[in-house]
Length: 239
Image (cartoon, rainbow, N blue to C red):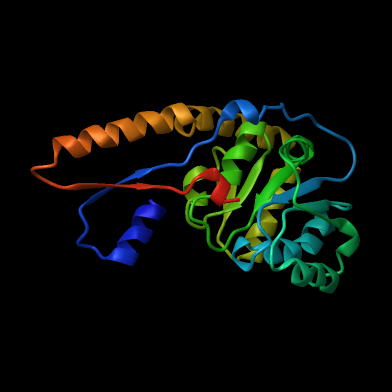
């Protein structure tokens, strides 16, 4: 698990047993919508902070290549951050400014609408503790194309619930997006499986069950092997 590896790296290998409790979401506030085949150019979505580690620059670099095989493809970027000006300039340098919309921060309802409308949500993080946006997108039924950085590699099981690529690999990102757009039927099937896995493993009910189990385990091993529980950040601190 990426969080376990990071805790070990930061605090050393001599730690007590570490139990990771995944973050979760309230599935009910992220309504699911079945993917429908649409006419016209594809719409890609990125949602998150505009920071270097989120990898938006890699998605912008890939967009001209994606548009060669899928003409007219557009990218909507929802989020704010310190790298906004640099990313706008990056889009200009790649000559895709007219194909990219920078929306800034959006409200919950607008974000749900964007997830329902997009042909795929692309999360190209170079570093990611967990990636709660992947869970929110899965809940809405948006096809997932994500990097394997950190927790994203745990949130998405390729090629079952989404498609993945190595962080910083623009060619791999391009290939994954092209594959998703070229077969919308399979993309929709992966989205359905992602929603089912989310409900089974990442709902707040499941997180509560894991937390209770960890507390019981900790009490039971207090006099043998000490136990330490590491809680992932709350959703509000991740996006």
